[in-house]
Image (cartoon, rainbow, N blue to C red):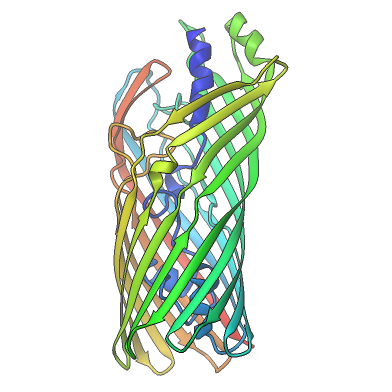
Length: 420
C-alpha cells in the first residue's frame, strides 16, 4: 500500500517541462515578433507600433493608424542536459532532454474610426516538451512530458484622449499534456509506469492595459493579467504493475483531472525617445507564482468514489526587470537589443524534475526593414539561460541529486507585417 500511495501522489507532478520555461515561472514573453524577441520582451508593454500589441498591451493598438496584419514563425531550440552527482536508483542523465519546437503567431488590428481598435492574436504559447528517457536518474518524477497549446485572444482599445488609451481582452487557451512517469516496484521487480495520455482543457484569462503619453518623449505602459484556473482532464493508464494488490486497484483507474492556476501578473514599462533615432525601454513585473504551487488531482474509474489529493510545490512570487534599446540605422531600417532577468519561483531544495525552473537571463537582438509603405519584415533572436536548476530529490524511495550542465534555449523568429 505505501507503493500505491506513492503512485497516486506522484500524479501531482503533471505540468510543464524544463524547455517550456517561461519568464519568472511559466509565462513566455517571446511571441515570435520583433519587439517581443528583439527586446527580450522588454518592449511588449509599451508597444504601440506593431499588431502584437493586441496581446502584449491592447491599449497600444490606438497607436496604429491603419489596419495591420502580422504573421510570424518562431523556432525554439533548447539544450537541456542534466548532470547527476547522486543517483541511488542508477540510470542515465538523459542526454539533451529538449527538442526543437515551432511556434506560429498571427495578429490583426482593425481601426474603427479615430478612437477605437479591435485586435485578435492567435499564438501557440505553450509548445514544447522534454524527454529524459526511460532510464533517467529522476525517472520516478518524470521521464517524458510534452505540452502543446493554442491561444486565441480578442481585444479592444479606446483612446480616451491624445495622452491616454485603455485596452482589454481575453485569452482562450487550449492546453494538451502527455506525461510518462516510472513507478518504483519492490525488490528485483522492474519499473512500472504511469501514462497520462493527452489530458486537455480550454481555459480563459483576462488582461487589461493602459498606455499614457506623459510627455512628447516619454510613454508609460501597464498590463494586468488575471488569475486563470485550469482543469486538465483525460486518460490515465498503468503498465507493468507486478504487485498483485496494486495491479488490482490501478487496473480500475483510467481517468485523471489535474487542477492548477496560472497566476495574476502586473507589468509596468517605460519608453523614452532619446532622440529622433533612438528609443530606450525599461520594464518591471510581478507574478504571483505562489498561487501556482497548489495542485489538485482527482483520479476516477471503476471505483465507488474518486481519489483526491493535493500537492503544494512551495513556489514563491517572482519579479522581473529588463532594459532595451531600438535604433534607426536609416529611415527604413532598425535594430533592437535587450536584456532581462527573472527571479526563480522555487528554491533549490524544492525544485523537481518535471518543472526545474530557476532564475532566468535573456539576451536579445532583432533587425527590421521597411520594404514599402505597406510591407515590412523583421528577423530576431533571443538567448535564454534557464539557470543551474539544482535538484536534490527523493522520488519512489530513491535519491537523485545534480544540476543542469547546459540549460538554455535559442529563439529564432521571422515576421511579416502588412498595412492594409
